[in-house]
Image 1 (cartoon, rainbow, N blue to C red):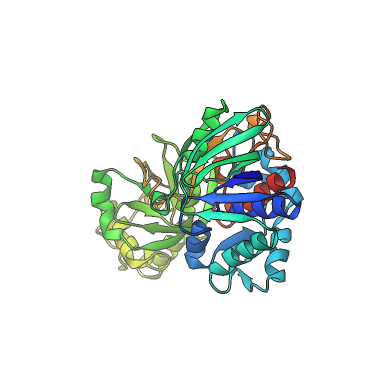
Image 2: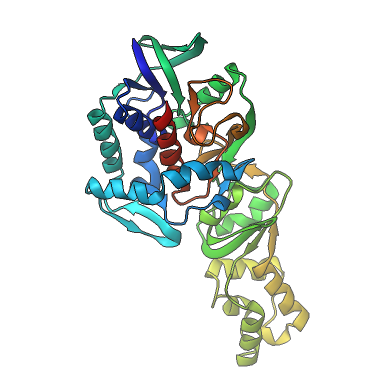
Length: 391
């Protein structure tokens, strides 16, 4: 088959790129090894798709060059995508921190995109494995399970390595490497953190406990929920900090962010000296966590018998608990992949490889990773749109 543009990967970035290229009158084929398009869209946001965020800004994307993403993000904004949702009649709502979700099923977003591809004349092959991509003169040859496809442009939108059970592979990185493009080392991101056995023995009784806290690693910090699990720590704040934490480093956990534990304990001591520490802490912490802190600090005396130094030690533990993860749950549960095709090798306006005319990379396969909360979908929409305008 001969086409103008072949898009590899029918996820968020791939479908957006195919729509834009098709709307320009290009003959477009989109190919994916999955049985259906948009599988990550379907499962995202608990099935309601956190499709973008109102707070898009450069400092909420990780990359060797965080400003690389700005060109695409400014030319196709979150408001542009919202307008498409509105035009399709898809109801949505805002949750915390600017996160936008569908009122109904995420399948509405997939239907919007596949309908737009159909109107643009895009052909789609699903359940079709992809093979080698080579260039001969001005043409690209792409091997697929349905035969060779010859195209003037190739858009690689195959995602990263996260959630392999959904079919994620490192295919896009292999294509980049085969053309001599540099990669930034990849690692799981937006992922729960795990701890050593000896630490878990103490933390296991807390499994299932959640607090609204603050987690810090270096200069990065997030004020969101933290969830204790049988493997370690999860919850939005932990997923966020996982993109910044590195092996061997510590994280600091404030389990009562916004409260003055020193003042609360002093008031409790004044109010009732016979009160147990766990009772005083129970005013701001879940009961199991209050009991844990009391036991871990080996405090068995009533409040009246606790010195100022002891109360300070309790406050320090609650506000600045230093923890050392040993790793993460890996790509199995990671929402995205950090790293990817080095942005130095790509044109920020078009997403085209500078040294390989006609070869484009979009979405998660690129070294651009957003925060939790719709940022990565917006990068997919924006970068896919940019490639589709040029391919």
